[in-house]
Amino acid sequence: MQNVYIDFDGVLGVFDTSKSLEEVAAAGYSLTLPMIQNMCQAVNMLRLDPDLNKRYDVKLLSAIINDQAGDDKTEVLRREFDDDFADKAVFVRYGESKAPYAQDNILLDDFSHNLHEWESNGGIGIKVYNGINGNHGSWHGYAVQTTARPEVIYHTVKGILNEIHA
Ligand SMILES: [Mg+2]
Image 1 (cartoon, helix red, strand yellow):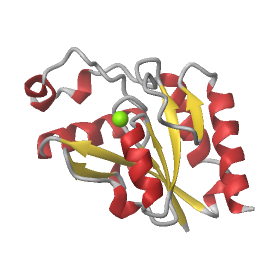
Image 2 (cartoon, helix red, strand yellow):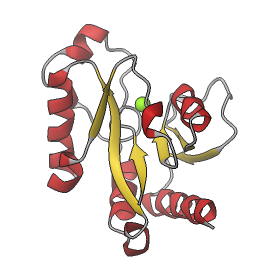
Image 3 (cartoon, helix red, strand yellow):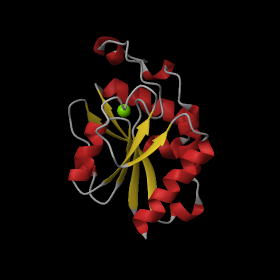
Image 4 (tube, helix red, strand yellow):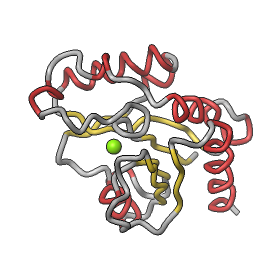
């Protein structure tokens, strides 16, 4: 079984660039964030797809500033998805690499640095363009757009997974 890891900030939840680190670190911060509905719906379609279920486990992989932020994000997953998705969420600390999870696994992330690191460590990255990022043009791999309809995001990711698997 391979893992398809989904980033939180800028992928499932709107990333608010105006917030300070202090505000992000405050209890309850993630609970009030607007969600990126197209991505949330597409992730649910991927999670519940019977073909993909046999080969892939879809789970969150997110960086957090403190334990409270992890608890808050878990609560958001419980609210927006279900207990299963919330309970298997994986967290790393801010400044820590996601790369230890990369080997043979897939990562959907909005931050090219994470994706480059991921691919250097034996994984495959899928860049999520959310309208804020992508200004440096350093990513030339697989990609999806949060403005696309959920079905389009779902079919795009499924197509990528099938190509990788082939
Ligand atoms: Mg992110």
